[in-house]
Image (cartoon, rainbow, N blue to C red):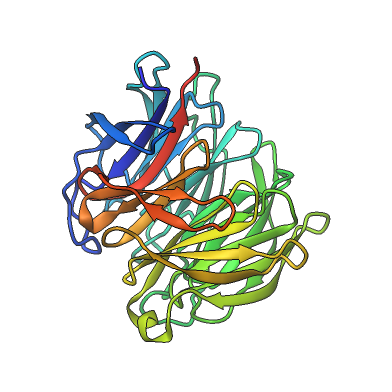
Length: 368
């Protein structure tokens, strides 16, 4: 039995903004932390468009979103991860209270699942929630939502920012707040968070037309970083935990000016030591590597590495931090890179993991 599993969410139902639909469901691979090799195991079907995955902090449960155009509400499905076989066992599902569920994450105590809905169509179409909080039962099942919030307004771009588009939610390191990046509003919206309850607290406006997508907090220092989908930049931010506020420090371009009009940033990750930042570029089909200054918190571009395929929608570090697995959506493969921990450089390994229309990667290290 493999000790480490790599789960890959794969698009299996047509979406007009996806070029392909070759997936079957949630593909599982045995991952070798010594070599970076990935061997196919099995695929869990019976789920529509599991485009985002999240493994619980205790490694016992996997949560998969269903992103389907035309549904007033997305769906989140919970699966138990069998520690003996690695198979996924269905637990239950809950509606997301809004259309096009984009991303999910956990509060720092692992008691709640946080979800954001991108939102399409008129804002009068119910239920139209941007942020939703779900309690988790002891066995990992999703309980009905206990808190929710709706954003309003629009941004600079009349096509991509005609309404709110919440895209990512992350709890602050002290778990006192949750932060939502809204691509449609060019804002990071901060909510007070306590026992599953939320209350809007503050927000940070980014330059018009930025389109903030996903973001991360620094693992050691009071900084955060957001990848901006629409203008191909990353913003370095200072976080004041006492006041619950973010402040803009700097903005760095991720691709050459000649490539920015056809590029859309996607995932962003930070190394566990907080020294390196990585951002995926769809269109330029690369991973940007940035160095983080411990003193100032500013991320500076080092260079770009080809992603090993087309449309790198998502990527994740393996549990050891020695490898980076990149879901190249339109090349039907997950490319594995060895990470040089000193320089941050990426070396592409041969034999990528093959699976149809991969959109998200999640690792779990099994006990024993």
